[in-house]
Length: 70
Image 1 (spheres, rainbow, N blue to C red):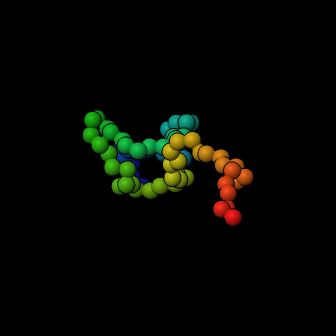
Image 2: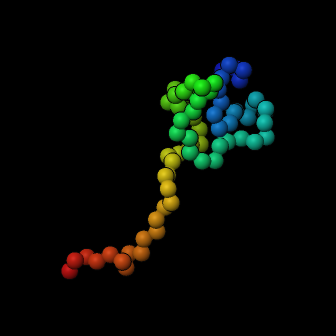
Image 3: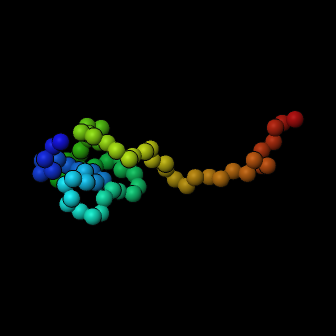
């Protein structure tokens, strides 16, 4: 595993480093810049506990509003 001093950790660090009690990022991340330089989010050493982002408000639909056309 890489040294924490030469890695950019996004969203948290492995528990064995025990650096901070706050871990994780709630929400979505689309772009990352470090010292005004873009950082690619696809070139990672490992990934855990992530999922796809959902944009906007989720719409709840009432099925009775739809007509079958019959």
